[in-house]
Image (cartoon, rainbow, N blue to C red; front, side, top):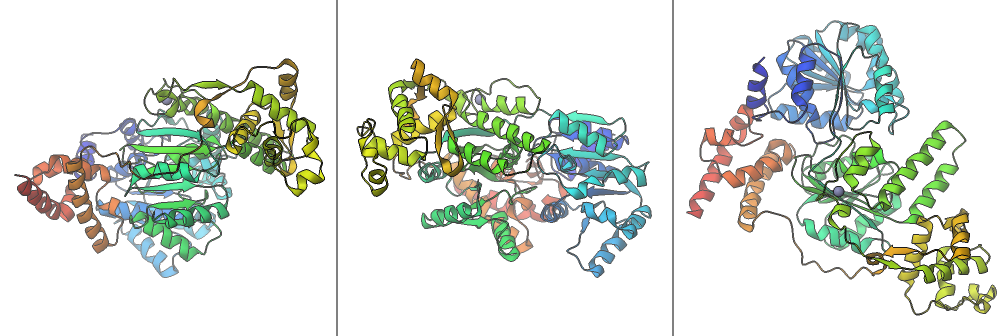
Length: 600
Ligand SMILES: [Zn+2]
């Protein structure tokens, strides 16, 4: 059984397993069904790729996305592992070649889409090859209680019927206990080895902020800390994705929009350019990134409230897969919550509708909570965790100051009430500020006692107070964003209940100035890293693979620190095994050598 360590070192370049990997490898090799819940970036693929190299036959991997399969195969061939895929995108000729290769048993891993299992011909083919085990990747897709249910995943129960003696290993990054039980039942797993890793990702710095205005200044300020680094900005609508991409490009930050409404060719081009570090930022709707293999995504930003915590956790999980520090920012406002509610409300009544409301509620609570964010996410997924103390905004800023807003809240509530609960927040704020316009005059609102009583404060100030009242459920937002008093709002007026807000929320976002820079250990080290990165880029281009497939950022950083001068030193660097050394080692050794010489 020591062979697994040899393979780990010689093929994957790692001296030791990461947490939970060895357990999974052992269970699969011993022929058990396995169900593994492992956060993104914790090294899931290795858990089935390594066993496939220890076994005689073929591993069949069911995966939901073509792009994902394609990236996996590119990465595997960089390790010198024989893998291929069969999908509807290939010609019959190409499929025949793959089938031939599989039969000649050159192949270790065969990736297929779930809909393949509908084909009798394909099932017949599977019966003719020696299958070691099946892998069901992104297994949460089988559950209607999850967040990415796929009809084609439903029929995966047939694997057990058609191949009763072949073990199944199911993998997912996120599952509550309900989803987990559903996966076990749907896939008919028998007496499975269940491996549930800790949810918490220690290298992710999680931040959530109340959005100020349209949030663009906050976005720029955040991005200024990540010069030269890549990341994803998630938006809720296609239109917003396009307008933010334009905005960033105008600010000289190479960005592209990505959403389901764009032509396939354009999407593929954006995806490719992002993998190859040619564009820094992809501004996307949720159509982007599922299963993305790029390991050096340094930040993930949400410009509005995500749909569910599952979505959120999976999306931020795309950052920092190489294990290096990565940062996330969620910008939200109470109006996001009401917008979502109205959208859910248009669905017909069902258990899923209630579920959607519940999930939204959890997401809103997460955003405005003052408790450790890692802890909140862990709780959501039925896991426990101590407060992170350093890796989230709530832990870092425990002494945030609250200020009293009781009197101003009363003014705003009373303005909503006196204007008849028929207008949106901006109009109500117009009244408070004493604005004169046609609408206000027609409605004779200049005569209200609340007219202009708030003109000593700014528009931003009043909008923030409105946001706070929505968040506290003193106000509710109906159709056309019309505000009305909720029970709690009436109670506040009646009893003059004291209200507070975090002081920083009232401060207007300063114009952004780009002086702050990144995050790297030392300038000298960073310069070396950049030279290694340049070489990596050139090699990647030559071989038509994404740079991170050659070596990850983590490997390059370690190399920059150690500057290996011979083969055995180079093999000590994490992520460099025999195959990669043979392919790229000489060029990197030469560069490390000349860097060292210059330094002496
Ligand atoms: Zn924390």
